[in-house]
Length: 338
Image (cartoon, rainbow, N blue to C red):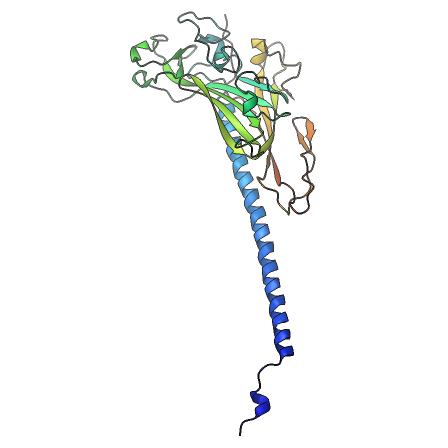
């Protein structure tokens, strides 16, 4: 005989209770998923900024460690055809259209140049269209690439330093390898590297994502602007200066801002006393993060920097990462006796 009480299904109350329990469990799973996803996004953003920061600092390090070397020659004042030197064997190189300053690309006496919280090239190589971000520094580095280029491989429009110990000359390659200078006779050809670093207010026009840019001397010769790292909202530089008197000892005794009266940018003797650089770079996430705290105040280049807050609890704040580094100039820009 069939027990009719046992054959009945679940009551409405039992179904409602089961549905509520299932909904609670589902909401719990969703909450865990959202929390995990938020944590993953925050970790991924942090890793991305760290990778970008390391990449930028590696570029800075490579440039600064090479700054002031002209192939086998270590004497800046023995490089003919530079801006502040004589054109003893060839006339000075032609002015470059769009150069940062008249014959700025061959101003080798300025192994390093920097500006403090201003754009010194707003009418030249960093115009208004470049979107220079006010309150950030500009850094210029010059050196000769260490890899020699054979005479028959010299490329047209490329600026080279032909160099041997204690003797060098600047020239521009042509389509004819016979145009390569024959003096110094045992010299090797090295591509001249000029890099100008600055911060732009955008990565792509109109996106309002600040970025680190680098202007490089390329074949033409011409200066080419490229975006290096997105999300850089501040860049600060201090220069290590050798105050030892009467002769420098090759060590940075003090670090000063580029606009310090300690450095006379027009004096080649002072320029040879610049022995290193300290760099600070502030990176931020491309999008706000709900887990990011309100902006803090950071010490950069001897001054405090407080990023602007979004102030929207639904969006969160930008996640930020401050990276810094200290670099010595390995190639002291020596001045040979006259």
